[in-house]
Length: 83
View (spheres, rainbow, N blue to C red):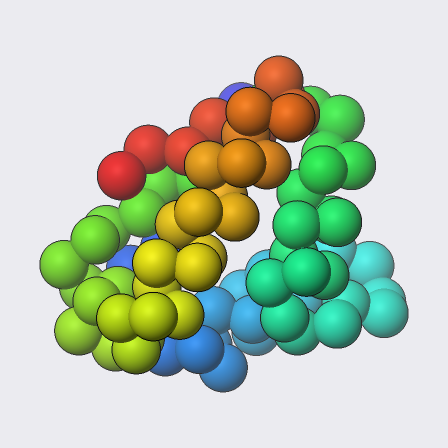
């Protein structure tokens, strides 16, 4: 099982991290991230460190990210999100 830890990342760093996991072109936005995570075909856990992300991301973007991650995990049984 692969684990991605989301902690102490601003918006650009967050997308830099995922850009390293997904093949080009990666759109560097939440819609593109949703599309990529929807197609993950192996067990993947995303661990979200709420406090450290909230300190670096705008609250609205953080909430959108979390909603997208949770919705995508409901759609894709290979994806687990832990907050």
